[in-house]
Length: 166
Image 1: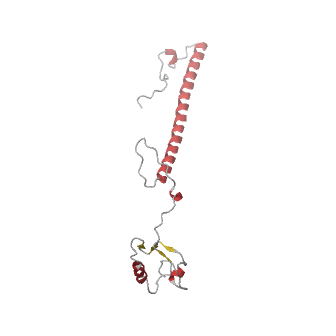
Image 2: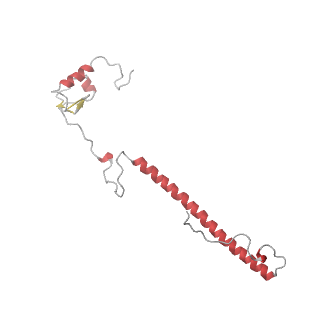
Image 3: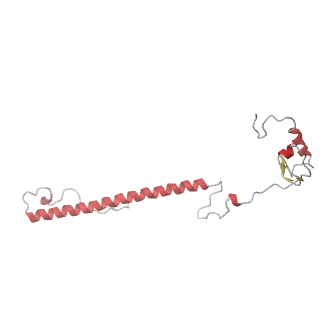
């Protein structure tokens, strides 16, 4: 702020005795000149004040815009590492435009028994199984683990079918 220069405008009492308020012995022409000088100073000071007011209003608008951009920026971050200084942001597709990576299938449904839990779950013949509880292609052990999941979940249900206890 030390390098900021404002227009220099004289203020306070002047060195001229006629300008210090002792104007009772001045001629009409001298009073008219004094009045014109004071009006010029007032116009100069008024324009400086108007400039300051406009500058403060511009500053407030800029700060509002900065705040808005900061909120938008931080709201859009998605745990991606910040680019290094001078590095531009990668032009990656939006997350909802990337197809979901599905687990590979490990079984195919042959038949579905009527009124069975499989039918209630919406399974149909030829559906592909990608996961069954905690079982996946990498750990199904020739489908033995699928049987373990079924056995662990056998018995009467105590919930309403949606994971909520009745």
